[in-house]
Length: 147
Figure (cartoon, rainbow, N blue to C red):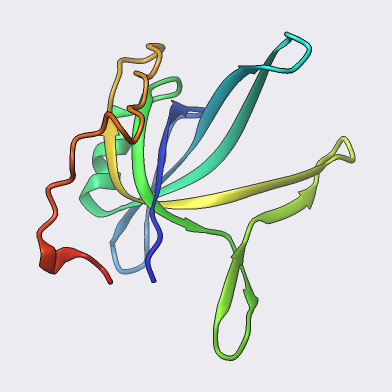
């Protein structure tokens, strides 16, 4: 099986780059994704979800060089988190869960970015994401389909 996540949001902090002992660059930053809707009482509601993003290699170096807090990005990647034993030899990925200083429960997922697209200048709103009906068909060769 295969999973993929696509996030469109804004950096919550400047990227931080470090190197593994073998010299591989790795960059991390947080991204906020938001949605707004009107509830049944006619009130505007907002929801923000924070994601910790990890980018490896040359792409991580470019993110460190060109991204900064507030910049809009589109990220394609895979979800990570805490690993828990599943049935047989399998594992389940669950969010990191902890209690905040205010006593409230907190949770987050980690994303390992496979692609990062810089989609706006700092402070510029991210463009609307196309609905599935509006998206152009993917350019995927039949032998590239993972199932």
